[in-house]
Image (cartoon, rainbow, N blue to C red; front, side, top):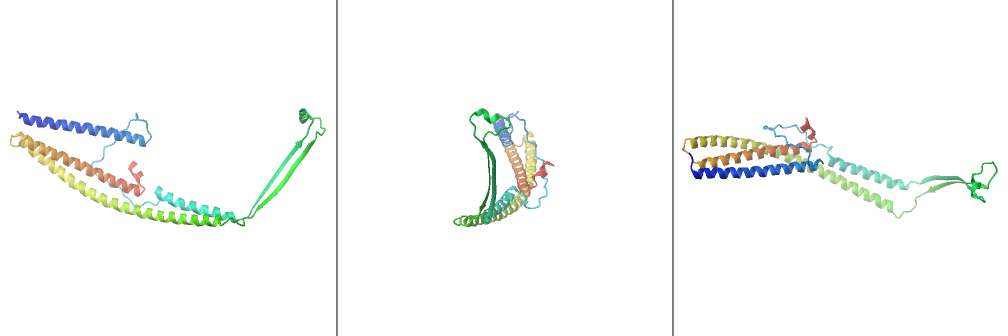
Length: 258
C-alpha cells in the first residue's frame, strides 16, 4: 500500500524519464545521420556506435608529429615559391629555338589532275624553309626583379606562418595533455561520487521499504544518483575527447583501429 501522492510522484517521474529517453533517442539518430553525411553514405546505410570501455586506456603519444597535413602544406608552399623564383630567374637566360617546314604546292587546270599517277609532272612546286630564332632578354622594365622580390616576401611569410603554426600546435598539445590529466582526476572523483550515491540510494530504498523514509526522500536520492551517473559519463567522454586530441596532434589516430 502506498499513498496516492507518492504514486503521483512516481508517475510524474516516469513520464519525465520517458520524455528524456525519447529526446536522447532523437539526438542519437540525428548524430548517426550526420556521420552518414560526413562519410558520404546513403541515409539508409546501417550504422551503430560501439559502447565506450568502462576504463580509460591511455595510448602512448610522442609529441607533435612534424608530418601533420597543415605542416606539410606550409612546407610545400615554401618549396613551390622557391621553384617560382628559379623559373623567373631563368627568364634572364638567352634562348634559341629552331623551326622548319617542308611541303609542296601544286597548280592544276582541273581538280582531277591532282590524282594523276602517270609519272608526268603536273606543276608541283616544293616549299621548304628552316629558321633559327635567338631570344636575348635585355630590358623588361624591372618586372622580373619585382617578381623575385615578391616571391622572397611570400616565402618569408610562409616560413613565419609555419613557425607560428608549429608553436600553436605545441601549445595545443600541452593544453590537451593538461586537460587529459584534469579529466582523469575529475573522472576518478565522479566515480567515487557515483559509488557513494548508489550506497545512499540503497539505504534510502531499504528505509522506504521499512516505512521509515518517505517517497520524497527516495525520489530525491534517485535524482542525485542519476545526476552522479550522468556526471560520471560526461567526465568519461571528456577523457576520451582529450586523448583523441593528443592522438591527432601526434599523428597516431591509426592506433585506434588496432
